[in-house]
Image (cartoon, rainbow, N blue to C red; front, top):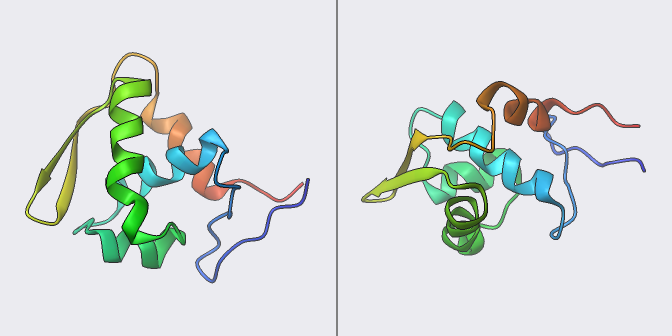
Length: 95
């Protein structure tokens, strides 16, 4: 499966692909001011869906993510996900 990448080199995973959530978590971790607009610009994940996607990270992967105004912050990656491995999803090479 060949994945398209956006202008920043971020793979554009299908909507139902868990790696799309990993890209979201990696973007929150990477960006200095991870607002919905900044996350959308970097990842291509529509800003109108980001809150719903963050909820999935909280519920399905036990991450602790806070929102202060429009800015997201990761407090804990939980026990399921590993920060180092999750951030690899943003750098995935096309197959």
